[in-house]
Image 1 (spheres, rainbow, N blue to C red):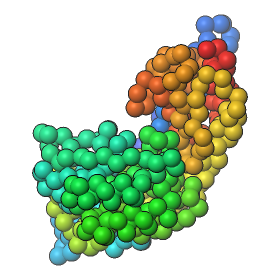
Image 2: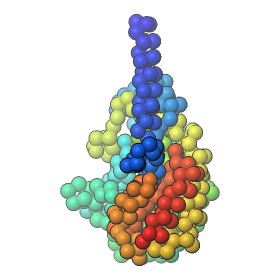
Image 3: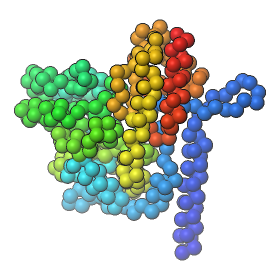
Length: 389
């Protein structure tokens, strides 16, 4: 039995190494030249920070994870998987909340939170370009969540206007406000602490709760120069992803009070989100929170470098006025080309980007594995494309 156990350990270890080598081999897409003898040129893939890949130390944590059945809970609703419990305690502490719940995805975490606050037919305040509204959709789908969205708008600072939220709460009687920080479709802009505090005051005035979609919460914190807990002090619940810039393979955390998380665990179960030996997901997430938070500034620096190379030099392509986190948005309204064609031409030159939201916008997202030189090369490709329009 001992020999079998050690054989399994070694087999698992080399299986992890094999998987890592496979990921590394497939990490880059290549541009092929028709000219003989010319080497393959690596593609710079800036489609999304969901493209981060786990490294070997992160994957090795899976082999040492203490596992149990997270679906078998105690009186407090905690499961039997020690690694999940450790991750949830760590996540709650990082954002300054009492409790946390491991979720399979960010969409699942946001949907669980909102459906814990609301029932079918309720009204929810959301940003007109919020990811929950435009991409995730579940809670507002007439066949599923059946909630009614009422949209607020971003002001000239790319932040919600507390006065507009106040007015909409008065008109609709909504009891939930959804925020997004940083904001994906605006170009990674952040809601600063002063505005978060004002929105909190408005919510309290109307007895409304605030849920924060913090998929890129730690990028927002780095961009604002604050901690995640300082942002989250103004919200009742927050979801953040470990599978984007933090670099874990899968998973998100929903955090809030003990009472809220207790109810949210019930919602998660109804939606089919309980995992059994989920420590294999939690272990890389723990590693990500321990090792990959501080490096997020590198992503922001690379995005700002690309922006600085483009600023004032583009003749046709529009550029967002500043970079606050790891996202850079291009505006093609006056470029005489649609986003799909622009991205296709970029790919021919070695830059893989995609349209986002409509046919006049394209997005670049910087993340772990993208180097400073990649940022320089990406900017030069965009400059070249602009000169050809």
